[in-house]
Image (cartoon, rainbow, N blue to C red; front, side, top):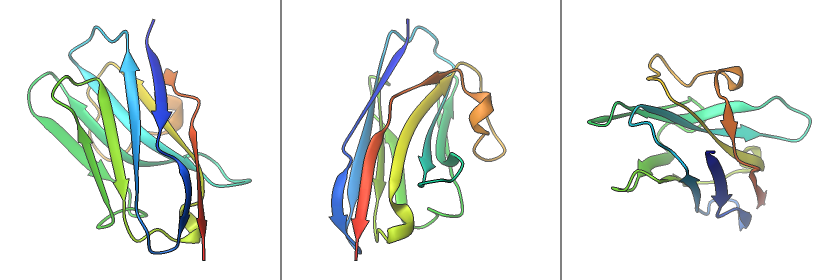
Length: 128
């Protein structure tokens, strides 16, 4: 059974940076689509970055909300997904979730409905 566990949330001042981690266990597929979703209070879950790979090259894409402010990466063991966000602002506050499925995903960040496996999330609070 695949499990995803997020780490790295917390409180940070506006303009600061955070690095979120998502540790995956039980993954047997070499083909993956993994993404980070942001859910602000009282708002829908929004995909902000995704990585996809068939075991070879990795393809990364960001949503406009994080473009030029974030770096998505994966470790060599392919079991930890990182999202570093810079220049944080109050709009970045909320829960951040990691999600995964076992097919390639191109053309932007897939919708939340596309993912079958989710972590429980990590809370980010940005104060001005």
